[in-house]
Length: 180
Image 1 (cartoon, rainbow, N blue to C red):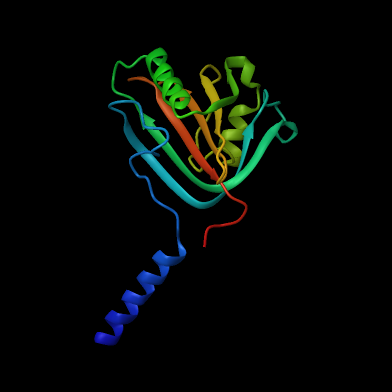
Image 2: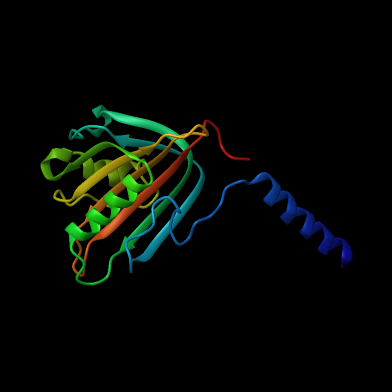
């Protein structure tokens, strides 16, 4: 029994030693969720290869202009409190991102996003590990925080919901290989 317990302990210690990824189930510390929001879905990836749109996405989304980055990623789907307005939610996020020193790389909404954005979201999962669709009306943003240790990218898709806005958020901490 002692040997089995020791073996399990060694396995757990070795796993912790080789995995330097931190899990943020309540939201990434660089981008706190809108006050009162509820996380409906969270995913974390030790290694994720993302393609974030940098221009309107054409119907044939394979011909779009993208920023390809990879690293550890954290994806969230939030519902905001009932009665929250899109304006208050987006303004809150904009302020938090700017306060963190991030720069806007791309933004669009409505037809400015292009006819292929929904396909990009639903068919490739290259912007997030959380499947979703683009309604065709709401804001989409890509921000970057430049750091000596690697850039951090924040991709946000806001969606008008029945009770209040929903937020799809991906935070990618750049790295050139899987963490292990």
